[in-house]
Image (cartoon, rainbow, N blue to C red):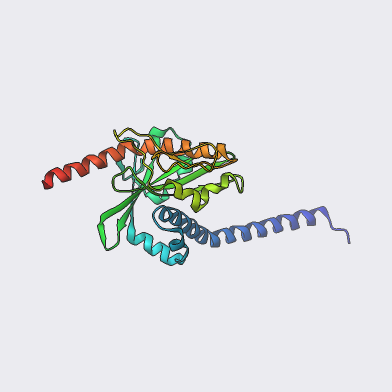
Length: 258
């Protein structure tokens, strides 16, 4: 039976409204779940810079979140090393909520730089490592990571890298533990205290164990490796003012104790 145009239009409008309400309702229901999943993933990446991957895999979601709350504190600094506590509207600035991808579009002087402090077990006042967040561009899209420094603020304790769409088996290997482990023990400053960063080299299969600022590269993924190098070189420089202030603070404490 042929329907009138009015009937078809009315039916289409009702169907659109109903589907819109269903989609809106589904989005509302799933939003907290999605937010929790993002929070868990971010905290896993942060902890991945200081925990062995097998230890992290053995933990359940609630255990990871509890471990994070117990062992990690955080703050946000600017490029001058000043701690940022509130935004222009007076709202608290939370390191875990900083959108680094959005910050990346701003001038470095206007960005917020999260710091995650890993405390020793049983002594929340004692620091085991400082974790900084890094962000940059790979071959195809964004790459990011978390880099942990020992308390000397120079020796790399561990890293975790992530990517949006690097080539599987090539640039995407930056997420593999074997690649990330190459950075452990490397230094970001030379013996004179000058910033040097750590750079992946072109090609793969060479031994750089005697060089504190070089790691083996990724065969067939030179552009991704260069992206990692630029990301580390840039972002670690942005944290340098904070590192310098922290070192000065520690020196003052030592002098006071003596």
